[in-house]
Amino acid sequence: MSKHTTVAVIDYGMGNLHSVAKALEHATSFTDNTSVKVIVTADKQQIHNADRVVLPGVGAMRDCMGEMQRLELIDAIKESAANKPFLGVCIGMQALLTHSDENNGVDCLDIIPGDVKRFAENLSDASAANERLTFDRLKIPHMGWNQVNQQIKHPLWHNIPQNQRFYFVHSYFVIPKTPEPIAGSTTYGHPLCVALAQENIFATQFHPEKSADAGLQLFANFIDWNGSYST
Image 1: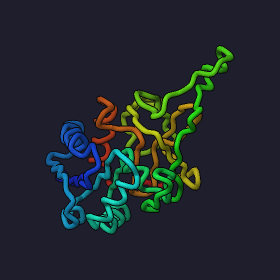
Image 2: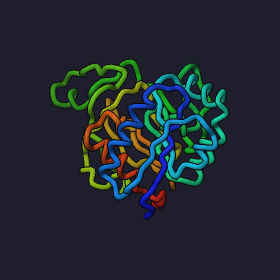
Image 3: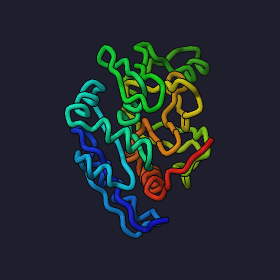
Image 4: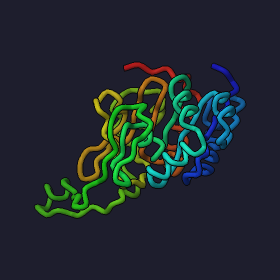
């Protein structure tokens, strides 16, 4: 394994870029790499030259895709997702799918086939209903800590316990076309996919940068990951 790596955090003006970059820098103390350079950039050449790439983001999908197009980043993102370790976070995960229902429908990057759907307005807690014969209405967005069930063995789950709690803030969730990419799930009214894995791509609906030591461990695992994964 190389002891030097450059991580490009793609800057398309959507939210949590610098907090992700700071968490990645902090996570380097968990890694085997002796030299890690984290850059926040919208420069296509820097993205191309980076050893690994992170696509973060918060906000609305139409704005997300619009800024990627305006900054002419679509090809650079797709190229990176095709040939190097690539991590999507929050809306950066949702953007990898084919289509989102947000903003009356938005075409996404179509790197992982599937759709992004909104939580139902009448979402309720089925587990509470089973215990008390009443339904607790759940708030949208899904905000706060929730357990993540690791559906597969993957290098990015290294040293992270099963059912570890991570931090979420989202009103939409992903439904991949087939179950094969599902790497992690949680329950919020119903089971939902919160982590995806496809070859050299890993993506999370939760925010590692807001998830304390478990999130830093996931970032460290990404920094050490060579991008190899097969089911």
